[in-house]
Image 1 (cartoon, rainbow, N blue to C red):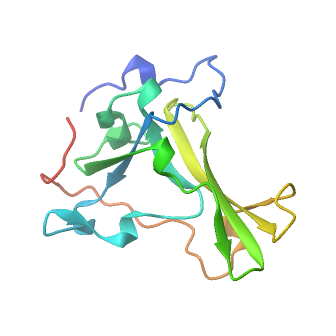
Image 2: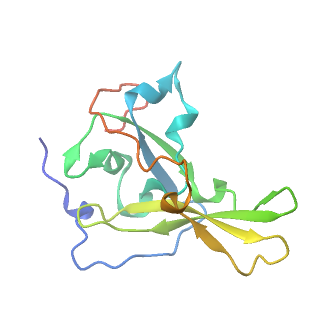
Length: 153
């Protein structure tokens, strides 16, 4: 098993909330979420979708899971592609943004977080979290299968 790269270790480094619109974010995807060369919609998990920042690690950094390198595929998207404002039925407005949430052994770790505000009151928003949303599973089980489609090295 390869050793955890230095760039993954948080150490004394602080969170960096400055994201460039062109910065790429990476997300690891288990083999059972690939179908016919694409990904299953279940690979996109909200709220608080875990991603890895390009600014602090390569695509393969997304494959580190609790100190282990898993053989999963990696997808990518740009920060500018995250919807910033989603009006819903004239009652609420959802907004999404990347937030750098470094972990002890995963400094590049970030989340795409979702916020909700009342229509016409978008200056006041509440962060939506799984623990406050009944019926939303906490976390999908982890498996260590192999994946060759889109696998990042």
